[in-house]
Picture 1 (cartoon, helix red, strand yellow):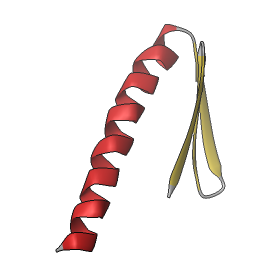
Picture 2 (cartoon, one colour):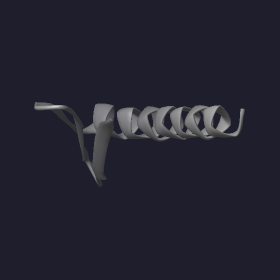
Picture 3 (cartoon, one colour):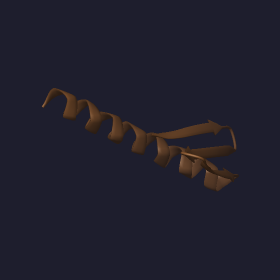
Length: 51
C-alpha cells in the first residue's frame, strides 16, 4: 500500500519504509497525478472484490 500526503506546495509519497518528498510546482503536478493514480488503483481493487 502506498501513502500519499499532499499539502499546498509539498507532496510526500511513502511505500513501505521509503518516502519521497517533492516541493514546489512539481509537487502540484505530482499531487494531481497521485490522486488519479490512487483513484484508478482503488477502482481496480474494488472491481477485483466484485468479480
